Every structure is written in C-alpha cells, then in structure tokens.
Image (cartoon, rainbow, N blue to C red; front, side, top):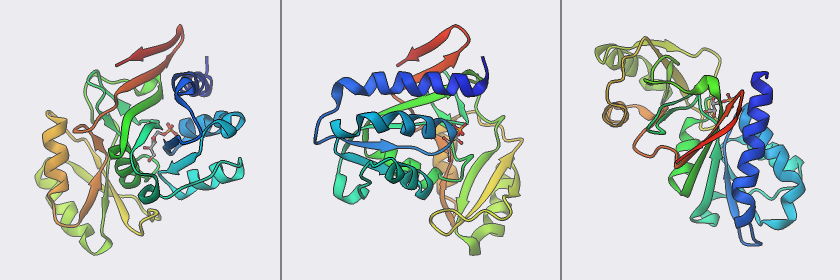
Length: 222
Ligand code: 5RP
C-alpha cells in the first residue's frame, strides 16, 4: 500500500471513531496537513450531523469552509470533544513531534481544549525515540538568533526554515540531530526560552488514541 492509501485508511478510521458521538451541538477540533486533509474530506458527507469545527490553521479552515462545514473560533466553541490531527513522529507513549506544516502553535492550543486527541498517521511516523524528524520551534522573529544560540546549548543543530511565516506571523527553526531523552522535560525547557512561542513536542499533552495505518490494517492504541 502507498503512504497515501495508509493515510486514507486512518482518515476513514477516525470518522468511524467519532461518528457515534456526533450531534447537532458537536464542534470538532481539526488539525493540519495531508492526513488531516483526508479526514476533512471525509467529514463532508456528515456535515449535517454536527455543528462545525475549529481549525488549527488557515489552510484547514479554508478546506472546511469549501466543503460547507462551519468554522468556529476556539473562544466561542469552548471544550471540544475531539481533536483529530496527524503527526510527524509518534512514540509508544503517544507523544509526538508535530509542526512539519508549521501549524504547531495553533495545533497545540486546539489540542489543549480537546477531551480526546485522536492522532491519525501512516506507519512510517511510528518511532521508538522522538527526534529523527527535525523538531520545529516557532519563534518571535526578533528572537530568532537568540533562540538559535540557546538551542545549540541544548545540543540541537538549529536551521531557520527560510521563507515560512506561520499563521501567527512568526518564524520556524527546525532542530536537527536533537537527542530527546525526556520529551516532557524538553518540551518545557524549550518553551522557557525567551522568544519561543511553542515547540513541536506534544508530550505533556500527547494523543489519547493513535490510529496507525499499516499494511495489515489500522492499529488502534490508547
Ligand atoms: C502540521 C503537522 C502535521 O500534522 C504533520 O506535519 C503531519 O503531516 P502529514 O499528515 O502531511 O504527514 O503537524 O503542522
């Protein structure tokens, strides 16, 4: 099976996962990226069964609207029953690296408001140890060099993601060759650097359910 077919399979599985819980008041949290896009597409036929969605990026908001799904602000929606999103890496503890699509800050905010985070990913995203994928860090532009120097002190090789401005008007530094022994501790340490908006470790609040696409089917882990 292709990677795209595996992503489609987990998007289908996520629809099955949430479908019994939908009602006219339900507002869903929706992630960003190619796997999340497949999930959004599959929500379209169900749009009359739930109220709407909060999106973690302008791109996802546009896709939802184009399919006739109402997009609400997070402040008006309150607590969300589900947040469905992809990942760049996920470990056995359902901790993740996210932000390959530069949407990490809004993803983390929407996830923080969700009762259940459902991670949908193809099997290539499963890792024993987080950090092979370069860890994204969103920074306030004036702090980029300062944050870069601090990241070097922590053992990372920081690379400025040129030409990318986040939906929040900030910049991204990707941390290469980064040894992450304790994801929860590192998430907090990175967030404590002045100028860091957030980082792509989703460890303190990981996923609650992982739907992982493999050759022999979708594996569900909680
Ligand atoms: C975007 C993300 C995505 O969830 C992550 O990059 C995975 O993307 P894809 O589903 O395209 O593989 O964190 O910021």
